[in-house]
Amino acid sequence: MQVDPASLDPELRFARTYAIASAALGLISLCAAIIPMCGGLSSVLGIILGTISLKTEKSKTAIAGIGISILGLLITVIYFIVLAFFSDIKTWQGRTGRLPLL
Image 1: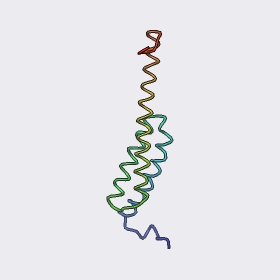
Image 2: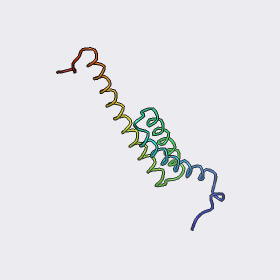
Image 3: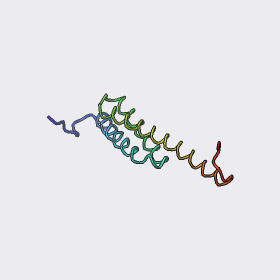
Image 4: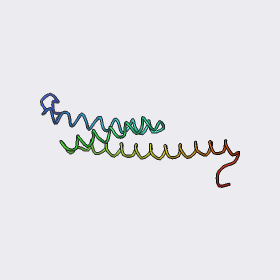
């Protein structure tokens, strides 16, 4: 049996909306991880909204949103580190003509 959203307490309605937004931002952060600024921002927003939602109502959607957002943040950070490392190698190779440690 479905509950009419208009009959819910406004605080509970916001909590459910934040939980869904957290899950959506988590999925967006997985796709946007190749652009570190976008992936990081959507991950952090997803974690914040999921945490706010969990304070009001313990829902599986909020927990999943936080988990997916954390995974997106992890992928974003790893990709940023790899990107920074390889751009440094190209810069180093351009200056000296050879790779470092070779």
